[in-house]
Length: 230
Figure 1 (cartoon, rainbow, N blue to C red):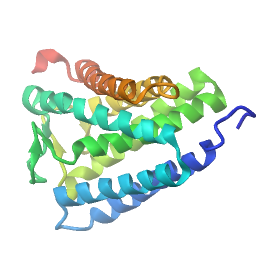
Figure 2 (figure 1 turned 180 degrees about the vertical axis):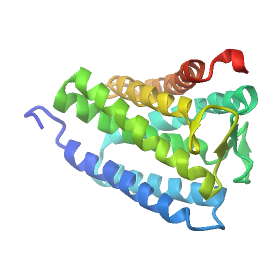
Figure 3 (figure 1 turned 90 degrees about the vertical axis):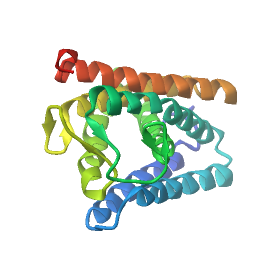
């Protein structure tokens, strides 16, 4: 960390990193639970939110609070991307999880994307400050392409969602891997606008994050599967 770095940066990274480790472990355990459904997804994301909100309150970390608002706004506007994947590409199916829906997505999907946005924005900003912008963006993109598809791979076993009708590696579409790489980079670039943003502008930047998710998936789907196949 440089002399001018945010003094909360290291502890913020630790709590965000803790959510990543916890989620990986819990998802692995849930793969063994035949009773898992939408309620386990909701519970895990509520736990993550409580953990992060407690940190925001305890450490008075306004920036992490902004990241959470940014992520939730991105998760709400991402609902359009989900609807496109479900209804237009017909490659995404949430029916195996059951439960209440928001448009074409499970009710817990916006807070799930909130956590993803917080995790990759925080890590991406640290990568950029530590290794430089170009290397940092490459690093977070690779991490996004590797880490997030882990959840895509496990989701079918946990009864959260499943894919079909597209090119895939096991249970994960090629376009998801490419799209998540682009999304991790987009989150990092947008998060660079947050440190001095008002709360309303933070929410607007988050909405732009949801648009970036849609664009990333559309570009990736076009490259890996081709719109002509629809």
